Length: 308
Image (cartoon, rainbow, N blue to C red; front, top):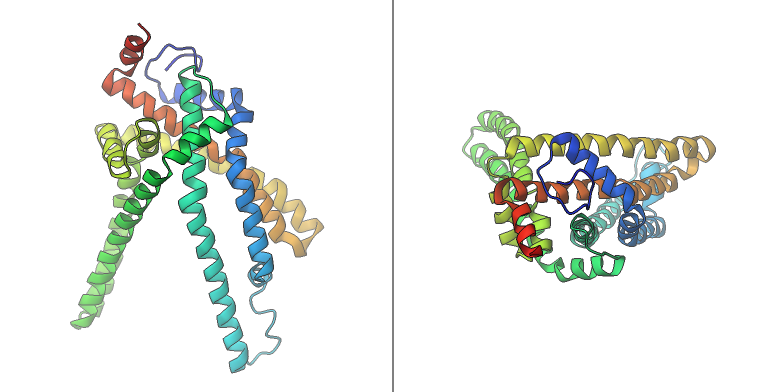
């Protein structure tokens, strides 16, 4: 990695150099990167606010029992409460699916394309970034389904084992095994995340399929698990701290000035954090992808050969 981002000289980076390169590239291309994030995050935040307001979810979230008014819940009130919970679940699930299958993959892919272009000293724009992201959306969705299937399959295996033991009368043993299995499942999921962390850059920049992108990431991270884990953990902590500060800036004054509208302030804080903090992780992952390729595949030599 170059000592100055985009200088055209490629070498591997230490942790400090990688963090410095991440924030330097963000600062120098702030308008472009923030715009890329805003294109998807602001409409999503507005959609969330509109749906929550129109369906009454916002009011229900603030006080789910406010409409009951009595200590004894009548059957009609119980049904109303159940319907409210189902409404919250339906709206929330719908928004999660939109975020998981459209907002996040498009934003991450477009940011990855723009960061790659700036890292390689190539011109980039909002339109070119999203054109590249849109062309890879199908492969990204495929990757997401594969990962969700892996996570859900791991969880289903644990639940199935517990249910089987319960069916044969070994409920106590099943409960103990469930606890052990869930504890053991955490490192397994962490391993999957770390080993597939550069799948998006592989899919976007190498035009790999969803499955091939995951395989490519698994191959690149091989032998680099702990350094990658440490870098991603450090970047996550930094992003969490910045997000917490942004949330406090909006939520604390909002709670003091307009207690009844804390939901609005929460949405504003979430949108601002998504626009300005979310891209930090995408930048770090893209630079990590190039750093690993330089270390393992001589990417600097490859770039030199292309320039001759």
